[in-house]
Every structure is written in C-alpha cells, then in structure tokens.
Length: 301
Image (cartoon, rainbow, N blue to C red; front, side):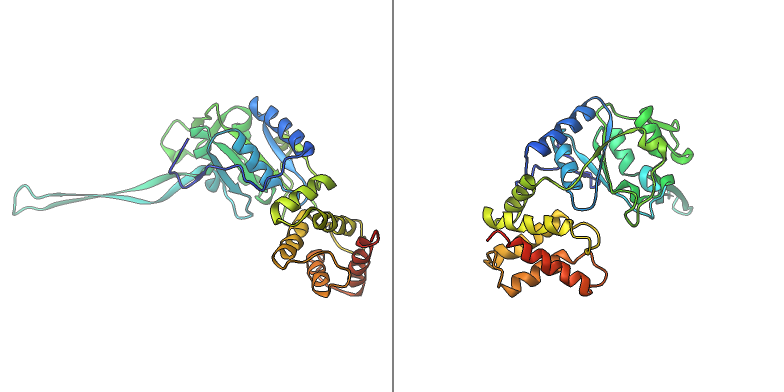
C-alpha cells in the first residue's frame, strides 16, 4: 500500500538485519501478540537493537508505519492533533460596479497528528522510546489500546471520538527506568502492553550482526565481539558497552583494512574510543581497564 502522507513511512526489510534463532523467537512471539490485536513493548538497554527490531516487525505486518519518537516536550496535541493556523476565505461581491462587498472568513484548521493518522487508517504505530515522553502526553493511548477509541478534543467538531481502525497495531520501545531522561510509565499503560524484555544479543548473533553490518571477515568479527563482551564485565568501565561499539570498531577495521593485532597502536586507539564512549572522564582506572580488556582479547593467540 502506497501513501503520500508525510507522516507515514513504508519500512523495508534491510539487508543488514540479521536473523538468528534468538531473533526469530522474539519476532515470532511479537507477531503472535500483534496478530490478535495486542500492542507490544520491546524493552531493553540502549544499543540492543530495539528500534531496528521494531521496524522489522512492522515490515512483516505489511502496513504503512507511523513513527513517533519519544520526547520530553510532547503534549497531547502532538499525539492527537490540534488547531494550527487559519484557513482564509475571501468573497468579493461586485455585482453592482459602484458597490463592492468584501467578506473575510477566517477559520482555524484542524490537523491530525501521527496517532490519529494511524488510528484512522489502520496503520502500524511505532512509538520509539515512549518513556521519554511525559506520562500525561500518553493518556490518549489508554482508550486506544483498551476500548479501540481515540478521544478527540472538543474543538474537533466531530462526535468527540474516533473509532480505531481494526488493522491498527502498536509497537513500542523503551529503555529501563534507570536510564537518564526516562519517565516511569503509568501502570494503566504498561498493563495494556505485552512487554518483551530484551538484552544484548548472544555471541553468535552479535558476530553475525557485526559481519553483516561492517563487512569484516568472520575471524575479525569474532575478535571484536570478544573484546566488547569482555568490556561488559569490566566493573571499572561505567555502563555496559552496546553492540554499537562492535559496529564502530568493525567499520573502521574494514575501511582501514585492519586486522586484529596486539601491536597496532591505531587499532588500540580506535577500540579505546569505542569502549570508553560511556565514560564521562577517562581516568587512570578507565585507561587501565581498557588496556586489560585489550590484552585479554589476545590471550588465546
């Protein structure tokens, strides 16, 4: 189905999306819930591929997609719609040449927002990082997900509500509450979502993602993934290094024709930058931790 609506996208299955036994299991469960009309929430730490997975699942539904990024500044009008600007109609009556009658009619113009567009047309809503929006901005979703009704503002000029199209589906993503910039979603909203808890991929999946997205050879990808996974267990490094670090290191190795080499100072610097991205300060403890992880990655040589 094609559409020229600028609020709507048509996702395409990307060649870089990696399907393994683990990802197929998540996709299968997600589609099972969506096909019976339940909305899902892909919840997990930053960098596990929630958005990529959400768009991949949306593509499998074969419906246009409305994408909403969570935003602290969101209001209800940003979700549902509102009166924006004016429509001006001017009538000039010059039937008698000596008498000119001019009539100006200024009318506020209603504009549907993304949620309304998805509900009206039966599109798939992908609400990315929805917990970054304030809870009150998401109130309109409660009746949408439970009763299949979108309550419209009184100034809409209609019946006050919109019945949700039966093909409407909702895919949400969220970071854990402890992440900066996230809000605790109301119990009423979380109760309406089936939450699939995601973690960083298993080693096989992470190696497959790294080779597919960067183009490096299998041995190099295994080394990069081992390096990153070792860093996740390092208490001296704040946070957990995501798969994005694998992609950053792998991409540079591919473009610069690098191979794993303990004595390559440039490669070490690249890895140091990627592994230390979560550090607010690169102190002696962090430097030592990255050097230790680097040395351990070559332990089996």
